[in-house]
Image (cartoon, rainbow, N blue to C red):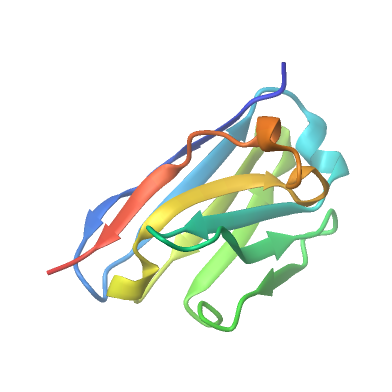
Length: 117
């Protein structure tokens, strides 16, 4: 069974940084565009960043210039570096294969990010 396990979340002050990691149970991520999503209480899950197979990143306007997505296919891992964090970045963060996002079975447990003073 394919698994994606997110880690690296926590409580951070406004303006702080966190680096999230997403480790896949197999070597499949090298074949796919990967995405980082987030879901805040009462909101729908939203895509905040994606990275193509070639390593090209795309970002939601709300995080552009502050977040950086990267991948290490040899380690089956996708990263999200988050800088200049704001309280509105507070959410549970998930990673997934972009093309799998409609399948509820494809989602991991996510990692909680809380930005608060």
